[in-house]
Length: 235
Image (cartoon, rainbow, N blue to C red):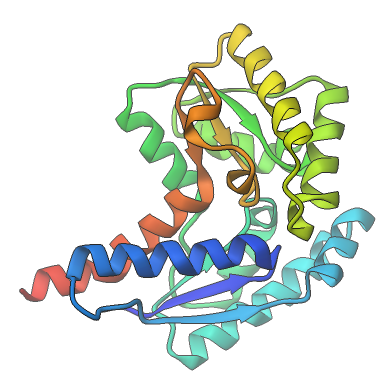
């Protein structure tokens, strides 16, 4: 079994889900008392969020690259960055380490294409919805991406940082997200990407009339697949 290097804490609420899903999936596939071999470095999200709000992506990138290097030195075989937004600085990490990093957007796009879906609605932080780093990765995988309007993007982002990252799950926020999802569907979305690892804490598969792709779950499951590749070859 390969050792997974997890960069978490952004927020720790969703990192808990990564750890749970990864271990549940390993147990499901291997049975018995099996659990995942993983290393977790959980950062202080307040520091990272401050870099985000100040637009200081270079400092954020260098800090997370140092974290990834620490995980590599500790024995990780590949890196999983447990957040969508911070994939904006993935180049900093790739330059620092010699082991692979599993891109969340690539894993998500692969899963979506298996369903023959091509036009998707994207929910996430304002950085993920508005900037090119994430949407372009999806588009390079053959997907057409649509996002909520400006007012909706602000409120979706507000709910992520002021509620979900703090562990607050509110029914009014669920209803708001459902309305935004429905507008995206009305605009032609065949499915919705929950493009922030906290959104899956609020929105579940039966909360929309179209398929929902939870990036945290997809990313975690792909990490297990990569971790067990060597195991399967050795059987």
